[in-house]
Length: 94
Image (cartoon, one colour):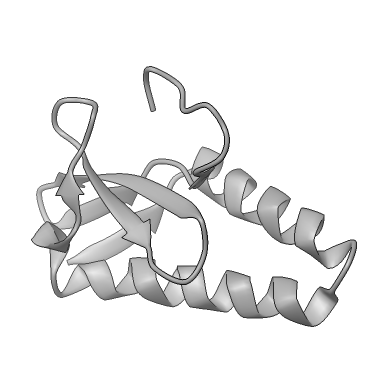
């Protein structure tokens, strides 16, 4: 299964990394790589995320950082929809 990061998801992850980099650039890079690797692991185990709040989606809860990553499986592709910080109010749609 191929993991495809949609534009909003890339923007979200970049914004979170930029915010952390203001204080600690190494921590930002570590977070970025960790989240990317966790999401990429979904290619082998796409059902490992919990059922999503939005119908037709699933959510990966990132264990080391306070992020939830909603995604959708479309054929042989896994679409990463967004990356959200868990302390922020989540939108009603992805």
